Image 1 (cartoon, one colour):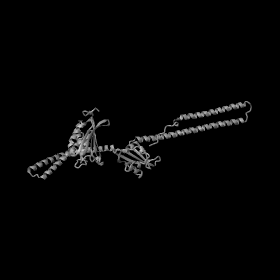
Image 2 (cartoon, rainbow, N blue to C red):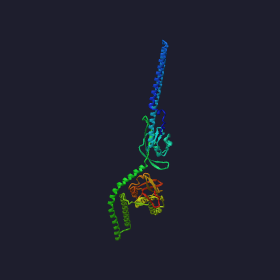
Image 3 (cartoon, rainbow, N blue to C red):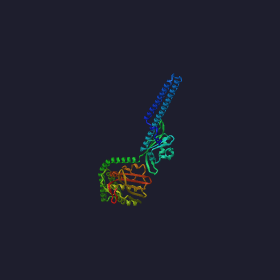
Image 4 (cartoon, one colour):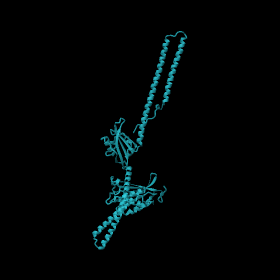
Length: 465
């Protein structure tokens, strides 16, 4: 992704004080040379003058000797100055180069550390940089990406290729866009991608920068928050509606029974009239059941906490649903991990959640199939959780329906009220747990419920945690 940081050189380790000392020593040597030459000339002149007159050639020779010494001293100074200047220039260059490499190293560390995937492409379509987050999100090693054209690395129809085609070939950058991206293990995730123009050192366009961030969990959390907000808003409305409708509905139901009895006593009740009255009674019971569901939605947090043995609970639910499973030609199996911890909660409400989920699974298999209930222990966030999963091989759920499953009154079944999963969500939330659904159309659905385990308590026969 970047050039490696070069090793430190010997020249870089030379301190400025050493340079000053070298200059001082050179000046001292040259000064000593000059003094020594002058002293020698003085002695020579005094020796010659003892014999009388000084020959005329002597001053000329002395002048030439001084000139040569001065020339040598000047050359020494010049060479020393050039050498010191070269050393200083090299040190400045090396310092600037080191600073540049440190900046590149900082950029490299930043790209390695940020959780957002970064991929850069030049104008020729060649991938020039990939950070580890992009490798993980795209499920591709950098060795398979760097130096290759993106339209060769990514197959036709790949979301990354489609987005880069718009940015590189059509110069149309994509804003934050959520796409389904499949890993090598065929697991689908939601990745938020966007592109922007990449500028070079001269501030001119140098390519395209693609950012990718996986938002699967974040969107799931957002949907859960939205569902909780809708449920909270519905609580107040449900309480008022249920209260206002309960009394007149009871009066209607009672008077229908009285009317039926009165008509029977008079002997004027025909067969068609009986059928009409039965329909009215059935609809009153259905309205009463809807009101009961309303009341369950309004009773947030009203649970009776006690230790629940999940294995016993699952055995009870399996026995309860056994006959319906046989009628629908569905093979119902259960798998409970030994030594499961107890759960602190309301057994009746947890049973209701399981029954609602299993009934939905049965409805998804109109021609029969397979349904499995499994319970295992999980460790997350420093605490123990008990996970109950219900899996079926039914028709599955369409992707566009997944975000609305926990919304009140949303249903995909004919005659459904759309309150079953909403109530299940409320009950699990009251227990401090979570519930999530994953599905593949045509392959089945998996509903996973997580409940916090009672601290330090195990089902009888289990080992201590």
